[in-house]
Length: 204
Image 1 (cartoon, rainbow, N blue to C red):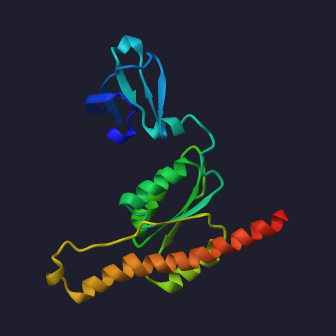
Image 2 (image 1 turned 90 degrees about the vertical axis):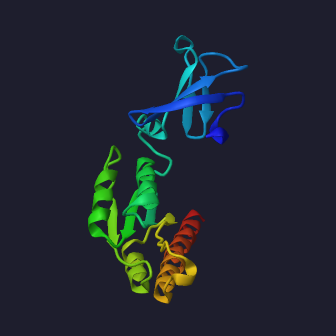
Image 3 (image 1 turned 180 degrees about the horizontal axis):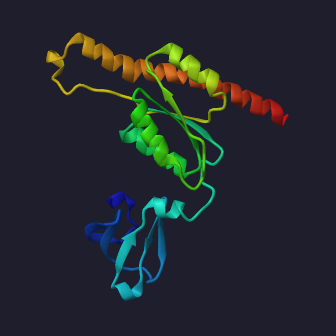
């Protein structure tokens, strides 16, 4: 949190209320009633609050605009059924992107997709398959011809000591985390290169 704060602002404590982080701040040498940009967030102070400031989440900023930074973009996100992949999909959708959710659990993917339906009214897609399967990526390439962004968030691990881990589990990790990423980049990268060439040709 220290890296996100403006200079000369010392955070004293924090608490949470309704999804927002409330920070007790003590200013040193800056004016009152000013807004300080912090990446995609804003730190607002008010004189009558006794220098109590609120760090607004990026979501509140997104709700106040109609067009996001990724409007008109198509993003394929692996590992989108939960965790980091689902969080990235949510943020991309809030920014106006159309998300193609990739994973092996159709129920979890559908649940994430339903949560993406917001003010932008975008028709997001679900692709159920194994990222380690080349045929799966060929099918994705056939159905999704226009891709702008690829996020490889799929990954697995086994919480055991290396010298006690069975070889088949090690192979599973390598095939998913390494080969899955390489196969997706290979297939989707070709689509991106083809789109780049087409865009360059149309501009001439």
